[in-house]
Image 1 (spheres, rainbow, N blue to C red):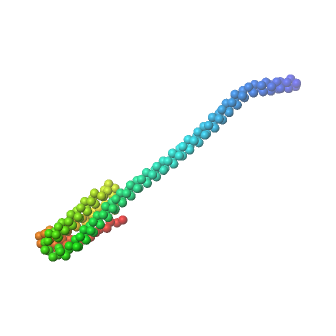
Image 2 (spheres, helix red, strand yellow):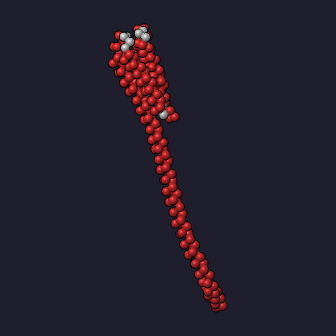
Image 3 (cartoon, rainbow, N blue to C red):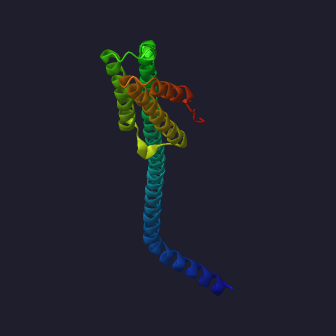
Length: 195
């Protein structure tokens, strides 16, 4: 039993002596691996933060792009609405000019001043229509803009035709033509597009 006891103590001392020599390098490797692992975790967190920041920037850029596109569309809508409004205002002004000379036209005396004013009315209508077409942004017309455009084209054609007939009737002292032009003018209806 003594021999066994001595063998166990000897083996323990031997193992203790051998084991401590191998533990030093293992502890150094373990420490180095822990440090490396900690550094990799920090780098991973930094990369995840960068990815999150980039995703936020991407969302912001997407929102900015959408806002820019909407602003451009709103600008086009405004431009088209202004072109339409300006056209109708010029037509209104032209009709007021005609009403100022309507009683002279009825008298049918063929005065040069009245002929000149009738010519100016026709020219003003054509100029208003030409300006409308120039100001209109046709590349981005909504359905409402297309409907407004169609109505304006029809209105302009009817107005110009009626005033040319009146002018031609007055220039040739033809009561029949004057009445025909005035009848055409009275039958013109302004169509309203659905908003």
